[in-house]
Amino acid sequence: MTSRWGITIPLEGVPLPEQRSVIARMPDLGYTDVWSAEANGADAFTPLALASVWAPSLRLGTAIVPVYTRGPATLAMSAAALASAAPGRFALGIGTSSNVIVERWNAIPFEEPYKRIRDTLRFLRTALTGAKVKAEYDTFSVQGFTLATVPEHTPPLLVAALRPGMLRLAGREGDGAIVNWLSAEDVRTVVPHVRDAAEDGREREVVARIFAIPDTDPDTARGIGRWAISAYLNVPVYRAFHEWLGREDLAPMWKAWEEGDRKGALEAIPDSVVDELIVHGPAEYCRERIRAYVDAGVTTPVIAPLVPGDPVAAVRALAPTD
Picture 1 (cartoon, rainbow, N blue to C red):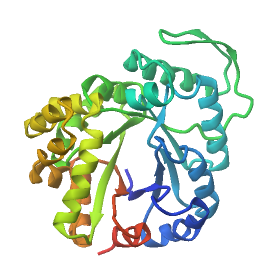
Picture 2 (picture 1 turned 60 degrees about the horizontal axis):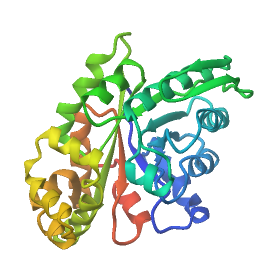
Picture 3 (picture 1 turned 60 degrees about the vertical axis):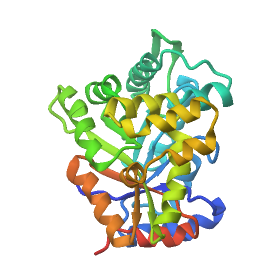
């Protein structure tokens, strides 16, 4: 696959309309991709729609859209609209998200996540071609939906995956996987599950969101990293992922969190774990660490800046320059 270098949009702390100038400059800085997320900020599609106009050469991707929070037909319509607006430049990444986002924030039962992803993937494969869908899936049914606006180029369908079952699904039925919250060395454990499951001979894309804090002193960077780790890796799906990876150094954090000791949970996170999961240090070193993910099997690194200051400066610092 061609060399790619992506970044997460929208940038934190900058009003969305004011991001036009920095996004427009990204191709000149060497960025090839922009990927959006969806939790409690901007939705996944609006920033990409803007970027499709502001920087027409950038590839666009969602990492990810939760499969629970939109109905299947609505998800197909959103994907088709963006694929039509940016022909051949859009990839749809779908995932389960987490029980926090799905249940606590959206009042939707977080049930049978593997089946829900599989069913949504199969539905989208058919629906995005414009074929009429009348089918009973294990987790939902669709009775007579036909997409009225069919994109000229059907977008690749990527699956957010952590552990073997979902990773194999991403390789077997998807066009690749989106991975998150892992070290460069962890990539060597994860990627073979995707590639070994592929049965059609096509190479699978592996997108990795990589958290980075460039040009920040180690104490500050590790403080930011600890906060992010405690916020994410105590969520059941991420805890199970790191237990599978064998990251026993996080056991004291999980214990403190279960006991309601949030301060203790933060303090229990070792520097070594922060340094594995958060890329930080001088910008040149950060770029080297990001390239280590590519060397380990990632095809599309997507940087997620976790900076205490100006995110635009971080975009410039993390650009793939020598």
